[in-house]
Length: 287
Length: 344
Ligand SMILES: C[S@@+](CC[C@H](N)C(=O)[O-])C[C@H]1O[C@@H](n2cnc3c(N)ncnc32)[C@H](O)[C@@H]1O
Image (cartoon, rainbow over all chains, first blue to last red; front, side, top):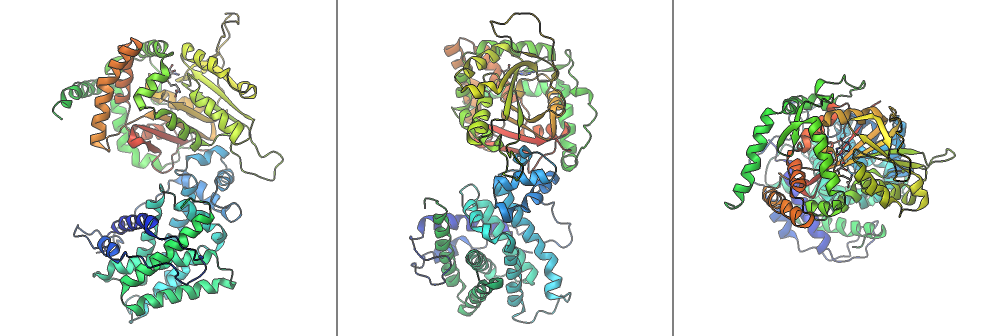
């Protein structure tokens, strides 16, 4: 039995909203790893909000029931999958959506049935990339299931996060624009929920079955590390994103070495928040 | 709370009684039960028209909380809008607390008429034909033209404003004279019943001769975007109107509807809103416009209109496909936007 991801999403949504107001203005560039801003005094906040609830826990990844139908109807999938092909050249924009509608054999106006417009296209990327991870599991780890030596879960987490980051390769140059859209107040809850689902999926595929008090901290740290790495990657010009890979390794290493997960969560959330805010400022958002 | 109850219990009881009598109710129940399967399916061929979607002047329907025939409803709705045509804006403001302008802006922005992606072909701005049904006073049509011609710099978008009521159309025609000439040239006004778009007549201006113009058909597959704002709940036969929308739209064309809806996801807010609409609005209608009955009808017709999901299922039943839930709530569900696409 696993705690529902939604609860975590709601909690993180709350904390993100508060970070938007708490985080002191900082000039650290997204591409630097030095933490120049003051650490947040938010350990209490995080602890408080990530406490497991006693409400009945629903199995999130059921192995006996078929997965719930995806969030996209057939016409939505047709338009969005076609529009997605235009993202590398046109970004997550109305252009890409209308071109998608055209390539799917419809009219320019047809794309306007997609809920939330360009955010719908971003959500398509998030959902399809998340769902694609499961199919890569065997290729990454082979078929053998039950022999998880110590350290193996951590190795798998890194491999899966890397796999997911590589899912951004094609649209990496467009991802900062997408983050700016995701940060619009209307879309923050849905964006945070997607991040929580991704992290949940990664722990699950890595074979982590522990349901203990560390459940929430593990997920919160991985969310923070993933978000920071993704943002780092948008400014990474190194061949094959080697710098991003190193960045990711360091972050994961620190998180496990320190042991005090709360501290690393706090640091990485503050890094991500300040770096994220800088990205948004550079996109002209008044924050 | 105890004070609120008597006012609300009367309409409730009426709703239930007349729902039981109404043959339409059986339809929506059937639609509901089949919704999960039909929603995801791609009805390529327009479905054969079921009996309930064929207009029948003698079939019972509702006029507010009364049960009347379809023909009677048409006449009485005409009466309502002829009498409120002049005070129409005030009425909308009352019903929506002034929000209707914002809803209309959002509705039009979400449809982004005239938008075309830049492409290598010679002229990227493709022409579009928008049909604004029950467009009365032109509120939606003028916004569409502004977005298309000005914001999207696409002058090859034209809008046909259609309404069953010449009094409402005349108000719209009158207002359109303050638009730029290029936008006026892209507008046309036709009188038509939304349930039968095969017979439309151009609006006769007072100066033109009263010689009868032969009715014209809005051709099948000729429209890119069909809009109807705050109109559809007044129709005598909504399934018939949805099928006409399906007929005139091109494959890929979009049906978009803005209408008052159900705010019942927020019970307290809903109670207050109903209290306001059932008690205050008819009274205000009487004081301000000297016309209590018309305003009473408007309030009741909102109460009578199907819920968001029921209406979505009616749209699917008429052959459209939807994305996501098929609708978007505005202001907690006081109004909602429904969209559907005609599949190929
Ligand atoms: C509340 S007004 C909406 C006007 C405008 N669309 C707006 O949003 O301000 C409703 C309109 O529906 C029209 N109407 C009612 N029944 C109709 C029908 N069967 N076919 C076409 N229009 C109809 C009325 O004449 C009236 O002008």
